[in-house]
Image (cartoon, rainbow, N blue to C red; front, top):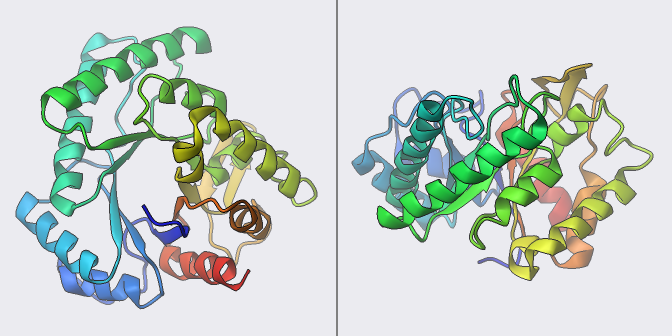
Length: 286
């Protein structure tokens, strides 16, 4: 894996000029911003045909762009209904099939909510579903895929940093997706606030060391500014919306000084390519 951090957008920015699925157009548009990663969005279901995925993967490979897949939003590893937990495994398998066709490895997913159970009970269910998902992926021939549980932005969702790290301990291949905006919103703007951001980012990066040097250095990440309410995340913003955080410069400085090389996907609202370019150029200038 690259020893430089990779940056890219979550899906296509509003400025993308194309209307139809155009593998070379998508790859060239992404590369035009100096970006080397792209996260294909399957939030509403895995619908891209595998032959089209393979064409996109080949086009991106020519531009040195790595691909990941965001699995459907309706995954619930912690549901009280076993049927929903089993369907969640199916959605992960569909996402693995797609990411392999794209030539990528990483599948990012939301773990679900706590619902009418304690956080401890929800985590226990999610851990059991995670174990079964790993077994199912291996049985289906997807043992080289990397499942990436994401830190979440709403207070009632399963997805604190500690919960995600617990899921990562199910198997050494499981790699966290650290969504810094989600953690900022979940904390009501106290974590990664302007005044404390350098120390807060350093503490988080220190915590990742429990996963070992490989995953600590090459974790997956999402980054955007996010507005919040008492319940946590409200909506994603752009880098031009400076009322809310988190700030990106302290994080990038730490990544560079520590020699860490994560893949950072920008999830800004409509300007994800432009804002990913800001991340990449800031990092390169350090």
